[in-house]
Amino acid sequence: MFILKNCPLYPLKDYLLFLDTEASGLPKNWNLPYSDASNWPSAVQIAWIIYKSDGTLIKSENHYIGDSDIQLKSSAIKIHGITRDYLDQHGEERKLVMQLLDQDLIRYEPLVVGHFMEFDYHIASADFCRSGIINPLANLPSFCTMLSSSFYARDPSVDHLRLGELYTMLFEDKLENQHNALVDAGATAKCFFELLRRGDITDEKIALQHIASKTPKPNSKEFPWLIAGLIILVLIFLISLSL
Image (cartoon, rainbow, N blue to C red):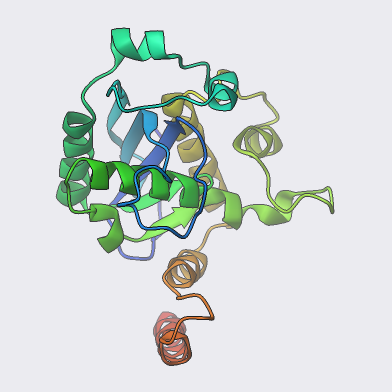
């Protein structure tokens, strides 16, 4: 339990959901729609932990997905160690697992947090699509601890710290059993609350990162208009904080 006082979060959410996935591989193209199932890997393990914004633990979920359409890459198995045999024994039906996540996202309307959030967002979104479930992540704010902690990287050739590296930097301890989704979700939560306690995560940073994630790419026809609108929204938000 991480009890924090006087640490308001933006967007104004009462709950935080820490999400982590272990996948069957990597996407071939990060810009293709989720309906292109052959492009997007599937989650083979997905875990999420829900906290109140003051650090009170609400619940945790941990599931392996065993659907027969999952084609595990050998490179992925080397990372997380999850094999086809293991999924055949312990895996659940994808749709049932994604329904559970969907229910929690709708019920708690949390700020969704991950380390390399972009990857977990896409993997979960692709599996929502495979399951025929409208993607609830599209309507929720998200936050990435990898992006927010980049200034901790001491090596100029490294842009961002891996989760285990950030964990060691913050707590001077080794993160054991990495690439287990439940372990990584828990470590992400611990890092998030520590960064929040240190003042490295603020309302403004959460707001700006969320807005940046929704900004269209520069080659989009909507880009000039939307970027101007987003700048205005940021200015209004920052002014409101100073009042």
